[in-house]
Amino acid sequence: MADHSRIMRSIHAGKNSKPLLFLMLAINATFPSIVLADQIASSLCESSLTNILPPPYSNVSNLVCERVWNSYIIRYSQREDGVWTIILSTLYTTGWVGIGFSKDGLMVGSSAMVGWVNKLGHPRIKQYYIQGVTVQQVIPDKGELQLTNVPATVVLHEATLYLAFQIRFNDTAAGGHNVLLAFGTKYPSRTFHLTRHDDQTSLNMDFTRQESTKQRPSRRQKRRHGLLGLLGWGLFLPVGAMIARYFKHKDPLWFYLHTVIQFLGFLLIVANLVAGDMMYWEKDANLRAHRILGIFAFVHACLQVMAFFVRPGKESKMRKYWNWYHHWIGRLGLFYGAVNMMLGIQIAQGETEWKIGYGFLVGATLLAVTVLEVLSLLGRKEAKAFPPPTVQMNSIE
Image 1 (cartoon, rainbow, N blue to C red):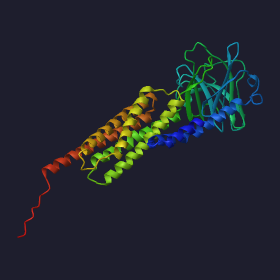
Image 2 (cartoon, rainbow, N blue to C red):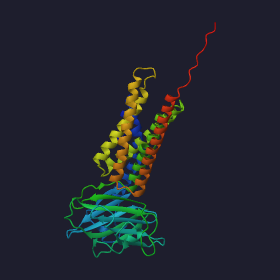
Image 3 (spheres, helix red, strand yellow):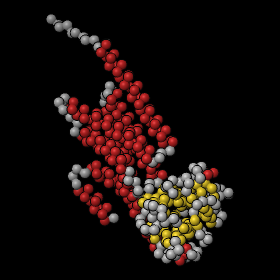
């Protein structure tokens, strides 16, 4: 907290720091929730499980405790015989909570322990095998987890749900274990088939070395980051550029529309950058090419904003060179932004609706540019073929 306050004071003290101040204010909006989550996790890790869980989970020694995702906390400990005790806890209202283990980090082919407390207040915990992506392919009482004879347990204590089980790991697994976390707010069916999850994330944990986890961005975080980029780079900025190119005959309306739409687009890509940067620093999201290209495109957008404040007058000799600069920096920025959007969707293994949505935006933009360019060309040819008549005034003698 002290470091954060010191940074904010130094920004306020700087002279030409408005862009940096804007970015820090956006980050500051999410900062309190991060601090609050850390404080909750710290207090839960310090709490005793003696009066919460039944034996042997209540008296496990040398438990390592980590917050891994939102309010999700994992405690784990290894016995001398190689058996691991794993306890997952999180805030709970309704539905189910699950923790899975995957060989390749993907949900399909993984096995999971899922727990919930039904509407009658009865706790339930089962192993599931995720055979496919549909609800029917998540099979209860199946899986490849090597559980021990000690029964797994689920306990709801106050507003926190605890899932506890014992498992044997293959400690030769390179790079740790791919852990999947997911939850659904609706209860499983009477036949114990799970409802579709509301959110999920994945992380890599090396239980043997007891290192910090490297969490991958959750689906909701990736959706937020992608949606902001889609609106900024895919909608607002291209529309603003088209208004400037094809509607200058509507002076001065085109200028005001162009300025407002581009400013809104710039705010969206600033929020997109902040969301992406938060994932980069807090999660295992070190996607070098996507990040560098995104920053490169954002620099072009910043150059466009700065160009607005140094725009020379229409009669200035520098106006021609400023126009070249403004046009080509803008076009390059839109190009880099479009390429980075496609790269981001590909890296995130985007669902079909994302590909269709962005493809529709790109197709609609190209179609609009083609139609407007043809109309503009026809208009220029017509103006040359039929120049406005010149009226000669007779002198009065």
